[in-house]
Length: 350
Ligand code: ADP
Ligand code: MG
Image (tube, rainbow, N blue to C red; front, side, top):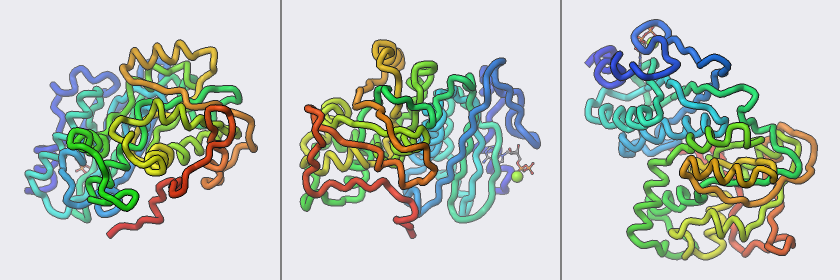
């Protein structure tokens, strides 16, 4: 199968499939795609690269891989409050394996269709298995929730539950937690695996929060690390109420874990793709209403306080978070909690 046949067969969106896709004037098949955000909207653009052996195992289920590759990109649009319009896909595959490509394309395109996001182009080459996706969305520029927008006095909110994907990864890898096999029943294990392999990008919530969220980020590297990016960019600090986090953002599947493990997962587990955002306390009811509209639960977990000036030092962020107990006293972390954010360069794969 030649390169062009491969593209035609798996990655071509017909005119019919594109008929209702707002924002796309011309899709794949030409030298460029043509995109047109609605009047008054700005293009939001984000790229992610996934390399076999580093970001996923080469034998991963290709349909799940297709889903996740797009989900993590849509999650970036969600964090900005952007509506997905289109994506491009650059793909290196060692050899054209038709069954693999078909499953991969299904995982990718099913999620793309669910979000009205059209595959409009890309590039395909032979090489070590690598995916590079770029997503395009539209957002009113003034309302895009930037990392630098957090204000002293804001509430800090998080969507859904945290730590699921990292415990799911431990399960998939057969790793033991806290010296013993993880005590999780079958139904919960299936849920955790789903959270790891088929994350739900919080696009509806991001859109519903437009004009409400001052700052937002998606949790890909862990709550402390990612909230830290917001704090550093905004020149502020945060106080998080650990009991509120455990009460609202810990899935029942994690509630039987030893406390140190649950805390490690919730505070530092990556790959959940939930949104962390800040909003004025006067907007609490509006935030809850937006969450209900998006059918996505949210939990208020703390507040923004004054902090050092904005900084670009990447390591600076998490140090701006203070963990508090219900009474406002510093939270006494149990021994064994691991709080380092996931660092891609510290875990170089095969
Ligand atoms: P060019 O030589 O102009 O770069 P290519 O031969 O690489 O064009 O690709 C032909 C057409 O197929 C282009 O419109 C391109 O966007 C599209 N295309 C190539 N690879 C992919 C892919 N993996 N997914 C979607 N479209 C693709
Ligand atoms: Mg090309």
